[in-house]
Length: 240
Length: 240
DNA sequence: CCTTTTCCAATACGACTGCAACGCAAAGGC
DNA sequence: GCCTTTGCGTTGCAGTCGTATTGGAAAAGG
Image: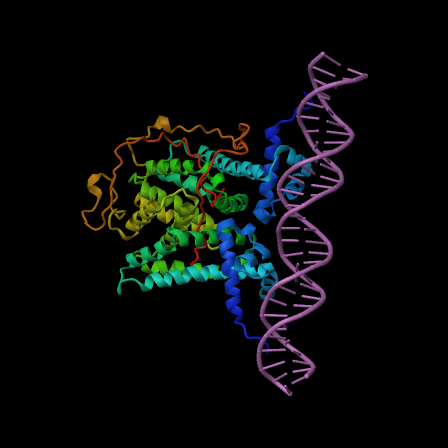
């Protein structure tokens, strides 16, 4: 055999360039020539390692998910030896959120691919089962063990990510919302438990635990009834 | 004056065609010629009503959000006269989720635009504040009134939408997760309307009448706007 | 009637796309 | 010394893209 070149290394190099392009110009700016230029190679070489553009896209897609997987693994590794389930979940989710710079870039790429797979069902099929695993894992960490709650937590993470990238939420707002939700799930602050009384100030458990700025709604605008002001939108992805 | 043509009507007709194309082939398949073909007109006409493609895209973007706004208004209109906050929120959210056929199509379009605005920060600036309003409205309906919980609920909706579109969640799973989350927020299963000092019955009277087809003013997005802003975008697939 | 203004179809243009084909350099196996 | 296989740069091709331009049909106002 002639040369010895690590095929998979080249492919990852190209995929990295693709992600860079997608992060700053969107997926529609991803062309063979652009990616090749970003990678510092010729378009011929890109064609050599990916016979078609779709092949390249699919490879990059799995590369994205592998990257975030690795990110989570790393974050969990750098965790206290015996974390509480709540700590563990919070760390995992916070790691996956596009809070800081590089995570935001990855998030943008992931979002672009998300829209991409919406039109190419075939491509998304492979990563569907892994999210089911994820739901079950989360459920195993919850006091209730309820898969419905687990699915909700996962969806909340996804939504926070979307809004962070959209600029609707600031990082501290997102983390605040996450913690508020974890409070509900783990029962530290808000009793959402059996006895449900209207929450007056004393409803809060005296548990010291988390310091949360609590704001009892004094009585801001009750927002009139259902007549909605919701201007909305904001909900692109859920769309409608 | 020569002809009398309702300018805005033509624009909506074209925007509708655009959404149809985007729903089934993705935003990258949206070209002047494709949209024109889908609308059954010539590309010249499209150019006559939108001097640039970006202008057309921006118009379609606001059309999407207006459509979902109208959909929510309609759903709320067809609700019992004096709904409990929980009922109200559930109806709103379920309406915005891409559960059924047409809602899924719109959701796909919205998701595509979400990724689109990630690269065009200018376009997303106008719809950001409305989501803050939305958060406040939701908070006003929660027993706790906690904005953190409200933001979480909104994010959960978004995430459910994303996973529904991605095929990771089935409709019943999504609704199940939503109800589980509402259980946490409100206590147990839907109690009979808590009496709250706020929201008097009178204020609540939401007019039942609803107009889905909205007629609107001429130009939401005047070509080049002063807008500017940050970018955005998402975190997908949950990557995993 | 003619003029003017709007509507819109047709076409042209340059840039860009994905892809196929070609050609040459390099590296073993013989 | 081949010779064959692989790596990869270059070029060409057919097609689509967004946009600018052109020209004619259709309605008012004079």
